[in-house]
Image (cartoon, rainbow, N blue to C red; front, side, top):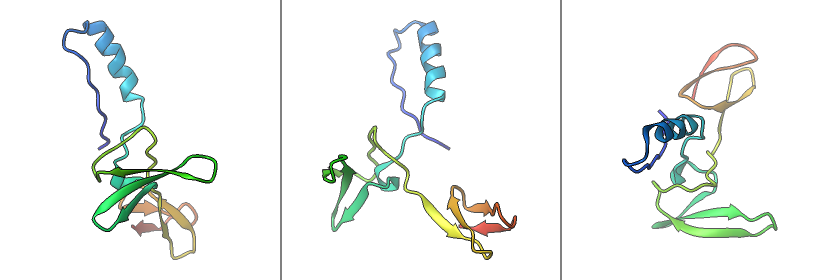
Amino acid sequence: MSEYIVRMPPSMPYEIRAELNAWYVESEPIVRCKDCKHYEKHGSFAMCMLPDGDGDYACWIVAPDGFCAWGERDVEWVTCKCGEDIERHDRIQTCPSCGRRVMA
């Protein structure tokens, strides 16, 4: 189940809350730092190593359960017996080439 954070004051009119809720349903799920491709563990602390586009990195010390607007889920790959590389989304994947079920 995906996780979203929605904070709206209770005094906000129902029509506006309903419209905002509809927008949030269409938004991207939160990517926790520990699941992000920019997350790096360094001994007793963890860092976000976000590339800035100039070949450098912007670095922050982060909590594993933290999140930010730039989070990108770290993609994991599994290899089927037929040699096809499959992007892992769930524990069991189906290979698009041969139809085998692959355990991730």
